[in-house]
Length: 451
Image 1 (cartoon, rainbow, N blue to C red):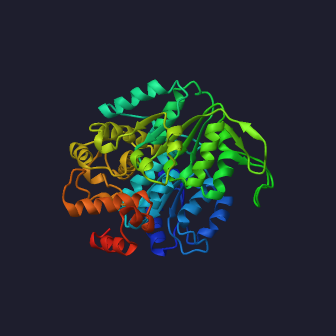
Image 2 (cartoon, rainbow, N blue to C red):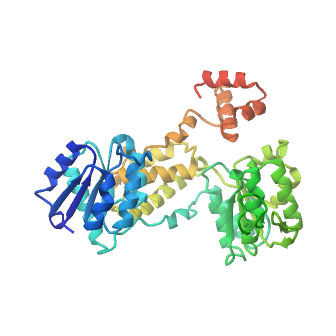
C-alpha cells in the first residue's frame, strides 16, 4: 500500500510531536488522525481501521507499567492485527523498541528523526503490509536459531560423541559455560535417539525452590499442600518413554539431590500426597556450568549422584575456542534475523568480521546471537559494519579479563574473584567462604578492583 492511500493514526502525549508528524504526513496521506491520550486507543480503533499507527513508547498515563508503549502495542495488535505499527522512542528506549518488534511492531524510529528517514520507514512498513493483504505478516519464530553449527575441531568431537551415544540409553552430563548451547546438545541427542518420537521434557532445576522441586518433578495429588487444587503430573511422568533434560543440575541442594538419587536408583516416583509408586522410563540428560572437578571436590554435591548422572560426559567448548565458527554462526544469525525482521539479506564487512574474531565472547553463542540480532535491526545498509556490532553490557564485567594464561597476580586474583562470584550468582557470603576470606575482606577487594 502507498502512503497516499493510507489512513494514519499518531499517538503521542507530546503536542509538538503530533504537530510535526501531522504537518509532514497530511499532504502525503489519505487521512491523518492525532491523539494525545493513549487510553482513547480502544474507542478509536472500535470505530475505524487504520492502515498505519505511529505509537509513542512512553506516556505519563495511569497504566504505570514502565513501558506503556508495549502495553498499548498489544492492545492495538489484539484489535487490529493487520495494522502496521511504528514505535516512536527516545535513544535510551532502544532496547524496549527492539522488544516491540518481537511483539509485532513493524519498525521503530528514534527521536529526533530526519523526515526523510521517517517517510522511508513508513513506506517500508506499508510495503510489508501490502505483501499479506488482510493479514499483517508477523515476525517469524526463531526455529532455525537452534541449529548446531560448527566446523571447528572442538565441535567435530562433539558431533562424533552425539552420534555414538544418542542411540544408547546412557545418562549424559553436559558441561560448559553459560551460553554455549548445552540445551541444543541435549535436544540433538534426543532427536538422534531411539526415543525421538517420544517427549523431550526440559526442567531448569536450578531455579526450583525446595517446596516446588518435588511437585514439579514428581507431581502431586489434590490437597497435598495448600495450593494443590488438582492432581498434577510431574516432569518425570510427562517424560516417560522419552528424554528428561535437567538443566543447571549443579545448583540444586543436598536435600534435592537425595530425592533425585532415590528416584534414579528405583526408577519410580511418588506424587506428593500419594503412597503409590509409579514406574518411569526415561533417558536422563543433565547440564551444568559448574566444572566437574568443582562438583566432585566440593562437599555441596553428592559423588554417588555424579556417578549416576555421568555415564558419559560432553564438554561444550566456549565460543572463544572455536575459531572460524564465530563467523559461521554470525552468518547464520544474520540470515535468521534478516528473514525474521523482513530486512534485505546482509553480510559482514571485513572489519566487522575482524571485530568478531578478536572479541572473547564471555556470553558465548548466546551473546553472539543477541549482538547480531541488534546489528541487523539497527543497520542502515546491506553490510554489517564494525560500528553496528555492539557487545552486551551485561557481559562487561568480564571485558577486562586479558587471557586465561595471564600470570599477573592482581589479574589472577581479580579474575578468580569474578569467577567465584559468578558461580554463586552474586551471593557474597558463599563466594567469600569458597575464597577462604571474610565478607569484609571480599568487599575490600571488590572496591579495589572496581568490580
